[in-house]
Length: 262
Image (cartoon, rainbow, N blue to C red; front, side, top):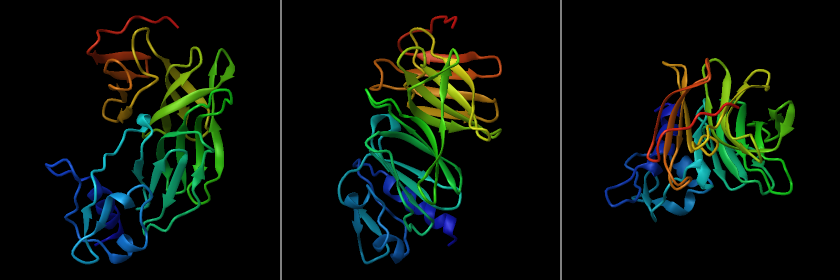
């Protein structure tokens, strides 16, 4: 079995629900991965069964969405992974050897994504009264901050909370954003320069800045944005085309979006 298959099975097995609503594992795993390198946030929910090479559910475990502040797991391009919990991002190589973690000093992490095997993007909440928050680029090997992504409005840098992440094949980074005034919507940054290159403002009566999920659709060059209950009173799903700054399709159980001239 190659390393990619091992890593994929290890990440997916705790997330395989049974009809009883619990989680189980039907794969056989190397003893080293199961006994020496527990993944932070998952150890309490899995345990050995029938020897060293299998796992069983100890208690039900639900993976939360980034916006709910729960644990998130992201597989890396080289077989490693990162595990998010609270203000910490734990980084592992393909054998689950842990690298120095990313610690945001009590700022809750909302989402994380891999740029490449050496760098990750982390989004976090703004701390009231302290500013900060937003989105940063970190070294996956050392946990050090390499770049902070800024949001500007009327040529002024704004403090904001960054939420769900997505990436395009032409080196763009998308993130849901919510600030203190006008910074509600979807921000876009150049992956190479780290500069903000676009911002899609949230229409009146619609929700983009608190999105739970972003997914760039490479076949259409559009961004799918989903804000779901209970993050908001209503559910909102949008398809955004940044080439002409249009919402080409939308659905909500609360009605259609209003026109916003900002």
